Amino acid sequence: MSGIYFSLVGAVPLAVANSFSWFVKLQPTTFIEQLFFIISDTEEAKTDHNRKIIPEICSVIEDNLQHFESLKAIETDIEKEKVITIPEPDLLKSSKIIFDEILKRKNNSKQLFIDVTGGRKTMTGAAIIASIYLQNHFYSLNQSISTKLVYYWVKRYIKANLKKRAYKLGRDEIEVKIFDVDSLQKIFESGKKP
Image (cartoon, rainbow, N blue to C red; front, side, top):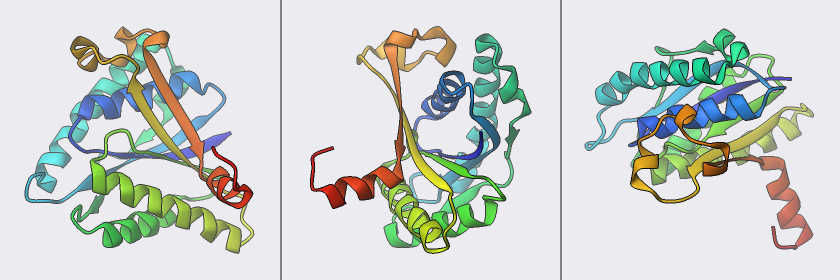
């Protein structure tokens, strides 16, 4: 099955690259057609700076995937120029922009992955809100499109591990979670704990 991947780019470019790389390695039956980046424009993180780190992220992804020998990922269209820019301090506006931009870029894909690993607080909040509204939008149109949140972390806080590229970390040292937004509604409707 194929999908389109959207990755938040905040303060930790290496985490963004490692998250996508491990996702590709651990999901061998999912082909990612396109990878888009979502960046923010704030006083602290100017858009120009965020745009400049995207080539670095792409370079690390390519290096990771070569070491992982993941040939299918080489065919992924990484959109270095067509980034989505959000005004980070404005949660509501950011949520709406993410929602609108993902709708524009989804093509005929049946799976949308939104990776919140690299996002700062407002970016991540906006992406989660947008993902819920996207899933509800697809239901209202009777479209069977799945929206999923992805996040990655290093299991043990060891400073050296936080600076390692994905291929230098063992499978037992990292975790990648894929959360189907549809399951959120089921959890709330059931009244049960997740």
